[in-house]
Structures are given as C-alpha cells and as structure tokens.
Length: 186
Image (cartoon, one colour):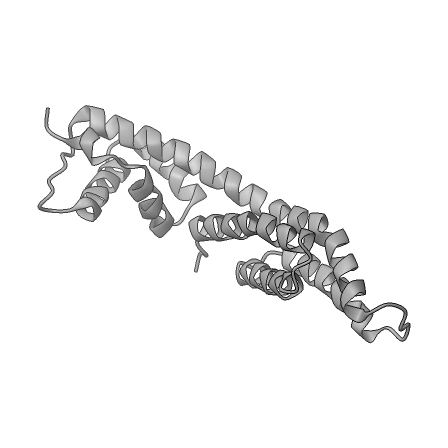
C-alpha cells in the first residue's frame, strides 16, 4: 500500500514549523524546553519511520547524542545542563535531517500540484463539468478526475499525476486546488 505523500509533506512541514518555538524556549531557559524537544524528536522520528525513510535513523542518532550524558561517568556539571548544551548544538542538524527527508517529497507534491492546477484549469475552461452545490464538491472532484483519465488529450497529464501520487492523494490535492466558482455555468 502506498503511504500518503500528501500527509507526510503536511505533517513534516508542521513539525518543522514548531521548531522556532522550541528554540525560543531554550533561549528563555524554560524548563519545558528539553522535554518538548524530546517529544518533538519522537514525533519526527515516528513520522519518518512510519514512511520508511532512512532519515529516521539519523534523527535517532541525534537523540542518542542528547541522551548520552545520562550514561556518562563524568559528573562535572549537571546532567540537565550537559544535555541541553548538546541539544542546542544539534538543533540545526536535526532540522536539516528532517528537511533532507522532506525535500524530495515536497518537490514531488509541488510538481503534482502544478499538474493538478493545469488539469483543473483545462476542465473548467472546457465546461465539461459544472459545479452543482446539490451534488457537492467530492462528487465534482470525482467527475473531474474521471474526465481526466478518460479524455485522450488529458490522459498523459493524468498519468503523470498518477505516477507522482496515489489516487487518494490526488483527490486530496484536487480538493485543495479546486475552486468551484471556476466550474459554475456561465
């Protein structure tokens, strides 16, 4: 079964957007900064491993470096301070590892988004599908997609879109990109 590229891109992007708040907590020396960072690392690691991405191992390695002082025999300084120092030093590397994993998927989503916009624009201009509030947006998306995969001139673009995303992701993407006003009868 294909994992959702659409969900992965949105979820990893959401996690990356949480990082500035975590950095601010470290900057303000908040006691909640370290537990929040560890929870953030766990969420990112789960997302990456759930999509079978090797960057999960890299994130786990960074987490291990943060946890290492707890197993150190050297007792100079407090454990919490040593872990925080390591965590702060690794924040950029953590963010970079997650972005590295996200980058190819985000590029694929952008390419798919551009194709979906083109298909939607062509279908809207053709007038082959009209928006009827009584049948709803989901049915309209199904009609647009059915036209795209059946019409000889639209098939190549639909095939490209299918090569990039699963059918469910295509429907989600079209739902984000479609403007029912473009499909109203003139």
